[in-house]
Length: 350
Image 1 (tube, rainbow, N blue to C red):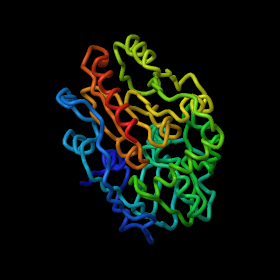
Image 2: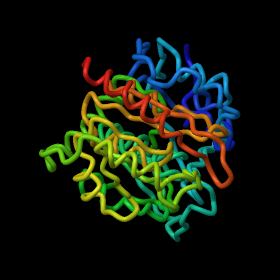
Image 3: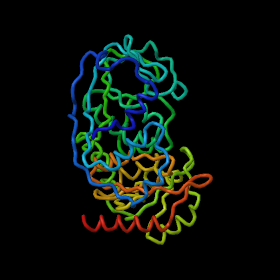
Image 4: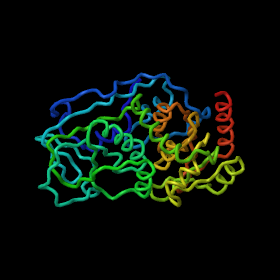
């Protein structure tokens, strides 16, 4: 079974590309072939799917159900495309009649460098990474590692995310920021697939943090979603967090911490729980190699993007569908307790 990753769906949905990249480029080559992989089953309660009412806006219920339950997953190849005479302007790339937007004009920073030229460069940012912090971690940090193997990485200039400078320091990832410029030669990577090359790059990032924070601090972590992203409130959050604390979980609030503090408090965690969203990838960089990531999902926003990441990394994916409630959704504590028992059984067998 093969489904487009959410990043590819977003690219099509936003209309960021004009013309087929295969037809417009000067040359292309496969950096890493597609991967067909048998994956471990998701962990969830019987009957949980009966509460689902709608999928995320860029997907549909059939695809998300297949993504959750597939036994075999096909991960797309990583492909490089070379373009000649490229202009960067207002968040987009332009070469002849071909263009691709990498961010909205409102988000893009403009400059007066239109007369400047760069001999060559490799694009180290993506539409999703430029708009969503979680995708910046999973898509753009790994994209940078691929870009620097090909040539000189650069990104389009925008306002940085709250934790972006700190992670760049910790991971030693830096590159030029371009607002407007002309380049003689540009390489663009299609890097949506969670293939073997992507896993290699995730491991590089994870190892860079492990080298700095060798001693695990927590085995069970709940990541609060915070207020910076779209609201997905757990309406019974007080009793929910009290229950987790009684189960030995540490409550981590990324918005109130520096990247160094987040890494320190999540390093080596065997179980990570959080409302599905951009705070989750903090843990993908730090949790235990064979850990379990559990996403809490509102019934009207069913999405299992993180299943692809955990499959790639050899981790396990769990999910719990909440109950619809005014102002957000409610987590049934009995359901949560039963799911934790299932997770603990899985961990004990590894």
